[in-house]
Image 1: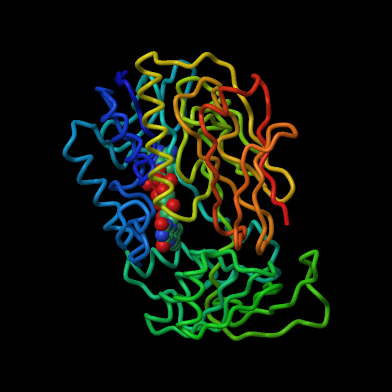
Image 2: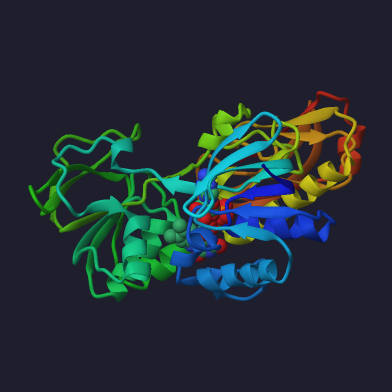
Length: 417
Ligand SMILES: Cc1cc2nc3c(=O)[nH]c(=O)nc-3n(C[C@H](O)[C@H](O)[C@H](O)COP(=O)(O)OP(=O)(O)OC[C@H]3O[C@@H](n4cnc5c(N)ncnc54)[C@H](O)[C@@H]3O)c2cc1C
């Protein structure tokens, strides 16, 4: 049994930021456990620019952003075990992991940070009629083939889903010489950042078809084409609108799923909307001493926010290890009228920090305002010229306001048009 003060599961930007912040706050023995061959997480395959604008105030590629943190980790005495897959977290914060050097290992930690990121929804998550021919894969898989392995997965491409990964891959495949026929999006709005729609579709003259989906794939050994159809307001394909589109590759960018298998096994309470843990303002989960941050907690659009959130988790873990605990009374948060969820879901009443509430809205709003209330009392309002589900929103609630609320009170955030 190895003994550590803090064990961090996942060595992506979230895990590294949490470990570094814990170190900065005086935690001695820290280990990062990462199942891939190196630190960096998904950023290693994101060779496009657009990372770090908020955190570093400069535009970096994914690997550049990751390496700023890898270099910082290397300058510390934080232990790192790569090629190491965590299998389980038992009571008493005992982690079981495996790799091909140590075999099966057990680590006992005073605190744990969960930073396992998320994975893409595969074809099986949606019902598309057709055979299991080759040429159908997630956009992230294609990204790895092109950017890491040096393979071109196809030449005539249709992309289903206009999330950021789909948009980035539309541009990437075009730059590599493929013809991207179109990006189809089920919703009446794109699910990607505005800057990615402009830079990846408009600049490359790739059509975006909204309220449209792929209803069938064609081809036996290799994909030969897909049938697309318009959808109605309930997102059901409209009979008679089907069109055949020739392609040898269908890339799916249909959402991300936080990798919470370990979290679930550890009996930690999950939020039904985010699919991540229910946490407080320092990202402590329902299990004392276990924290969660990054994409495993909520799907972020920008890595900069992952870093900011993960530093909070690292600081929270350091406070917990030092025994610097709060009184145990909470106020709660809830999204209503257009706000789908809020992270954190609860806040320590005697918190020592102003709290940023992060959330997403459920539709596109223009010229609306966000209203933060406790009961009928308005805490604050914030005007927003435009809000859409693809871009995370935030409001800040001051610690004095939180302290003034009765224990058990709920802070709501809603959209007013
Ligand atoms: C295609 C694409 C384009 C993007 N473009 C941008 C952009 O332009 N700008 C921007 O700011 N952000 C962008 N992002 C988002 C950004 O990459 C993510 O927000 C960020 O990487 C999330 O960090 P993370 O550490 O939470 O997760 P990850 O980077 O996914 O890291 C999680 C790590 O945990 C490890 N892990 C999981 N389970 C286990 C286990 N059981 N045991 C051990 N290790 C485990 C994984 O191997 C992985 O390394 C993009 C993402 C993608 C996929």
